Image (cartoon, rainbow, N blue to C red; front, side, top):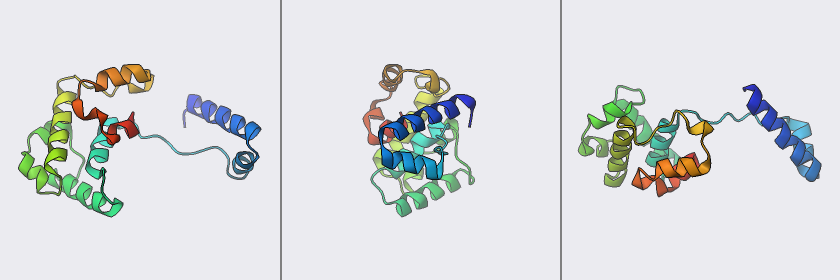
Length: 145
């Protein structure tokens, strides 16, 4: 955990401990939160699209088949664009999800969506950039952003 994140977690734990006795006990018993956020935003968004409105088990199976379609690894946007919608559907994606993923790959490759500066952007800046990609309004992207 980097120093800035550690400091932020300490401040959050101190605040919670001062204002809620139950949280104070949890912080005392378990220490600081050790959850590390995902930083591969592109992959997180694709995974969220794949798993949206599916059971965890079904989503895991489709994600596995999706990776297998690309040799067992998570594909970069260019590799996704090399597949047809029908090939993506064959691994279990719906027509809409296959198109969303291909469209996201297009937007990433042509620079309309970038993820390299998301950590330093305000919510308004992120939303403005996300407006370049219509399906951003889906629940998946709100979990990410």
